[in-house]
Length: 163
Image (cartoon, rainbow, N blue to C red):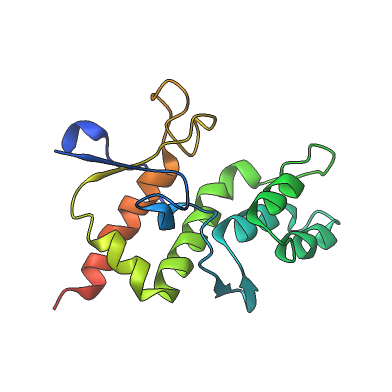
């Protein structure tokens, strides 16, 4: 179960990520590192995350439409459409859903798992100028939940890989 992560004050250095073609771009939900979760192949973490908004809503077709979306941007666009009702417990489960997605992604790809573990104990920040929930937002004061979940996963992977 995801828990609130550490704050930047406890770290010597901060690593920022956002664009998939920049250093640490593999940390982005839009990076093309597919994985299997729930018996289904997901092209990106964004595809999985957006699809889970519609579980048990009577609009299951949206989950499949998102899974088959050609790009993570299109998956996000479908998932963010305000005309589609979200599952009633979405606000309570969205952190767990994201954690499941990034965990499956990094477990499926040893190369990016190595990149994550290679960040040592540095503070990770999604440098999103528009998202103050998952990233740092325009003013840098956002909640940075994606960065926090990645640091939590890094610690979990480190413990699993220790002798």
